Image (cartoon, rainbow, N blue to C red; front, side, top):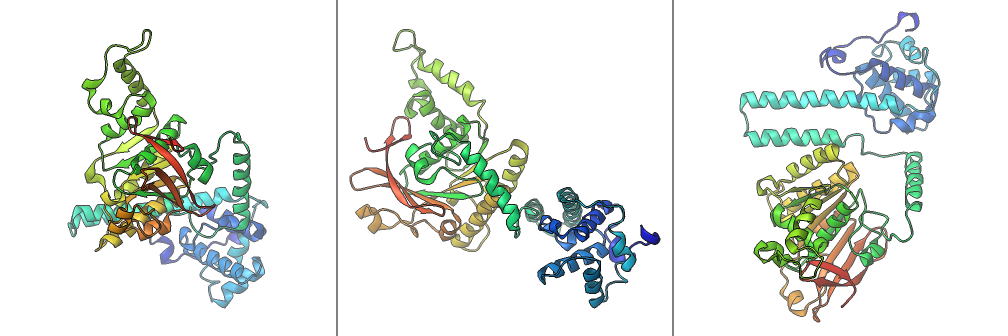
Length: 452
C-alpha cells in the first residue's frame, strides 16, 4: 500500500470475527477499477454496501453510489470531496488509503469476477449468521421446530435470490437481447414454439410456447382438462430432454406417470389404471402385446428427466420453493408445475391471503431462477356461468386474483354448450389473446388440435 497506509480499523470492521469469509483483494480491486474507469460501474449493479466486509469499503462504495446518483464522475477528487462532506475521510483511512486503491491495478473493462467474489463472500457470511441464529433458537427451544426451520429456509431463499434482482443497466439488457436474438434465429421455422413446448401446435402458434422467467396459469372447471393440458407440456418437455419438476397433490405420482404413458404407448388410460385389462397376446401378427409395450415404455419413462413430488405433507409454498431451488441447482430443472394451487399451503388468515402467498412464491421462483413455472387452479362456483356454459374470463379463478395478476399467460380450458372444448388465451403480456378449438381423446387423455 502507498506509504504503508491502511484503512483505519474500527470495531465494525471486526465485529463479525476474523474468520468470517471475505476477500480484501477483490474488494480493493473492485473499488480501484471503478476509480480508474467509471464505465465499469454498471457491472456493480447487484452489489450493496453491506456486501463489503470492511466498513471502510462499505462507506467508500456508498459514496460512489451517491456520486453516480448525482450524475457526477467517480475519481479521486470527487470521491474524497464527498467523503469529506460526510466527515468520513479519517474513518476510511485517510486520503492516502483512497488513492492506494489503484496501486498496481491495471485498467480493466470487466470486473464481473471481482463482483462475483465479493457477493459470494457476503452470501457466505449471511449464511453463517442465519445458521447461528437457527442453532441458538434450537438450543433455547423458544419456538416450534417447524417455525424455526421455515424462517431459516426463507432467509436462505432470500440469499439465493440476491444477485438476480434489482435494477439493471440498459447495456446489460442489450446483451441479453442479443443472446435471445441468436437463440431464436437458430430455431428452425418448422418449430412453432420459441419457448418450451405446450404440447399443442395450435397453442404454440398462439403463445409461442411457455417461457422461462414467467408463470403461466391454467384454470378450468372440474374435469375440463386442465391437468391434461399440463401433462402435454410435461410430456413434450421430457421428450425433448428438458428437466421438469412436478408438484402433484391431486393424484399420486404413480397415476401421474401412467397418465403420461397413455399417449406415448397408445394404451388407453382405463387399461393403465387396471393392469388386468392389458392383453398378453398381440392382436396383429408380428406386433408386441400390450404387456410388452407397457414394459418397454416403462423403461423409457425411467430415463425421462422428470421429478415428481406427491407427498401431501410437503405442500407448503416455502417447501415447494426451497426444494425447487435445490432441484434447479442439482438437476438443472427448467420447467416447474404445481397441480394445483388449492392443494398447496400458504401463510395468511384468509384463503385470499394464502393464495397471495402461494402466487408470490411461484412467480418469485420463475423470475429469480429464470425457469418456466405453471400453476393450475379451479374456477369459482358460479351457477350462472355453469348453467349458461359461459366462457370463463379473468376474475373467475377461485381465490386467485393475485395469481391472475402475477401470471404472464392465463389459459382457460372451456367446454361450450355444444360440448366443444376450447383453450382460451385470456392473457398474454407479449401478444394477442384468443381461443383455439381442441378435441379430447378420452381414451388416451390427450388433446388434439382442432374440432373432430
